[in-house]
Length: 216
Length: 295
Image (cartoon, rainbow over all chains, first blue to last red; front, top):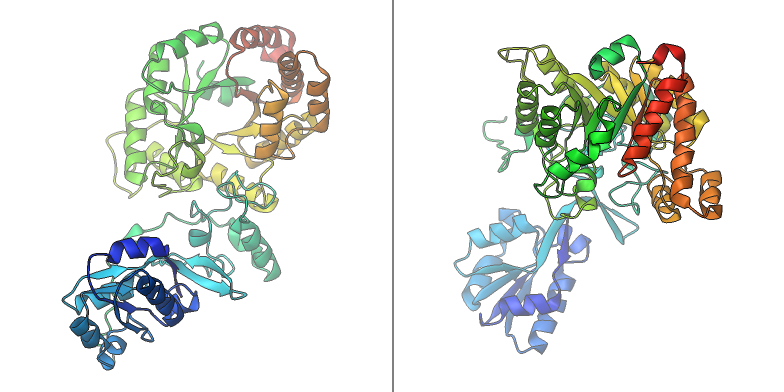
């Protein structure tokens, strides 16, 4: 999922001040799942803004603001555009842009989009993928060193991997320890002797697209 | 005799680290090294170590060469993509810089400009392959250049980092990629120095053991923070007991160096200051060590 972080409410207040009526969008995909921009947080932001004298014209949280069909199906965009002076979106950067493309009033974001990650125990969200466009995890025990090593090293750990910790942030483990034990477990440790070639960065030059036209 | 020739002949080599200035006045650095001229075999010029901005290691290497010191140009993957790395290496070759020491590099956030963009387009193994490719007369993309470079390629190894199997395999990858000498992180234990020398030799590379005199208890604790198992308790106790910890730390490393001279192939002093003592010690080593190593 795409993980986002709600901006401090005071910052949101500062951003929307002076606009008039605010329509608030949440998103029931990543933003809701990581409890930083779903319907619940959208109402929380609405309550806060109203307590500061800001008029909130509506709150909606579609099941995927990055999917045009879901944005347009219930006329939420038209409703938002009609009654309001500004839209505050708690969807990820992608969803917020899709909203902005389909309304003629300003769209502000109330979150920072952080990463593609996983949820553990409902409280912890960890970055697992940077969408680099050239997946190597079949070679590394299903664990991505590109996303989970700050230096994106593919030929083994750096010399800063001390006592299982990452030199960049000792509070996180060096991912190469995990890769080593996983590869040992599945009997593929010898695969790591192979030198991995430099990455072809053309695979991650943005903006990228996926086009299904012509596919049967 | 150049460093490269000494490696070929199996001579015991002594290198020392030089940090370019945090500014533009390089004269002080050069004059400070004078007592070591003709004694230290080559000077390893660091590339913004600990991610702190300093003068370019390429320029500093050139300045050393001009003054008659043999440099080892350090180049990391932190700040340059493959285009810039090849460009700098071609420039180094044109300036007559023969020795290079290639590594991934410290991460950006550890330094004094933590807001910088980290590059890491290549890793150390891939950078060594790149330099080997230049030595064969080709860019990384296979395109031929007008002449072959003639780099003597080095790399680094930290015996305290893990996981051990992968660290050793990475060392092997570096040697396979073309590293001829391997410089280690500071070691404070003679037995470990011998094991690491043997390990590196077994991969086919020339081991150069890193030595860093500890000047104080505070520095010992700092080193322990970087590599908890690297500083033995006996050294810490000695520093605590000593009325002159700086001298104690220096003599400890000197004893270590004498020991390594008996079985090893090279040492690398990662020191700042102590230039005269180092010069005297090298004289002592060359005159009192193994007969076949006297230069």
